[in-house]
Image (tube, rainbow, N blue to C red; front, side, top):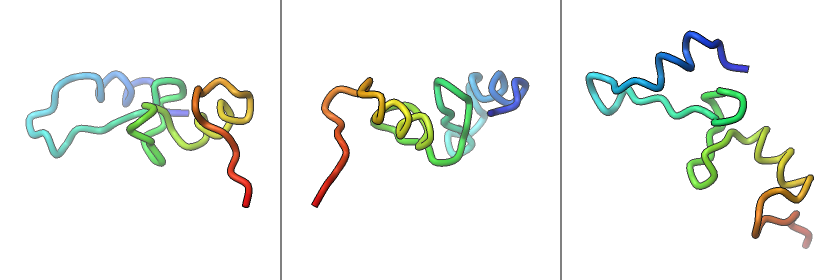
Length: 61
């Protein structure tokens, strides 16, 4: 869970674009962010198991 003050700080525009921090839209986590979905790996996994992400299914081989 991201700290509320850091989540609010990351919503503003940084002085340099390299300082931009992408955060999960659900929990605010900054590590393990998946750009295609806009969420972190933990939320992605939970939503995929529940079937809430269209076009995503568990791989089996």
